[in-house]
Length: 129
Image 1 (spheres, rainbow, N blue to C red):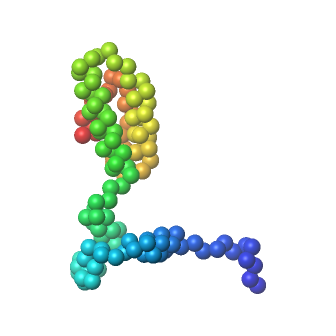
Image 2: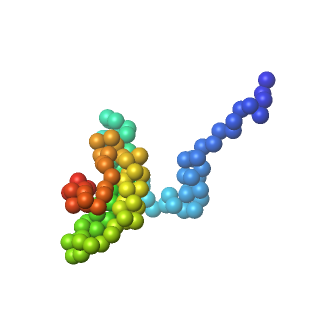
Image 3: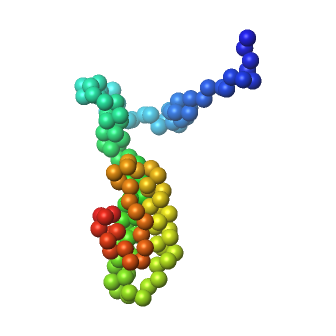
């Protein structure tokens, strides 16, 4: 019995993306095209190989991009505080804390960090550098 209403249709999202990219010419003139894969790609952990290839290609995970943005924002706020201690950073601190929450959702557990307040900007700056 084949009931099309109860069986969900299979979607190959990655396959569809690759197919569109190929049709648009994105798979032509790739670095290393036509060369054999290094032997190290066939040994060890597949995930580690993926991470190495992604790193070599310049890919940064979302949480790492957020980490850099947070670090830069804290450094800017610290410099501004040194020049004028009467500055109110309430909105900027709220935005940084939202980025920290997003960062903590996606980063590996050892990289989870706490939120920032007006008194902890200097201390937090050290942790984020």
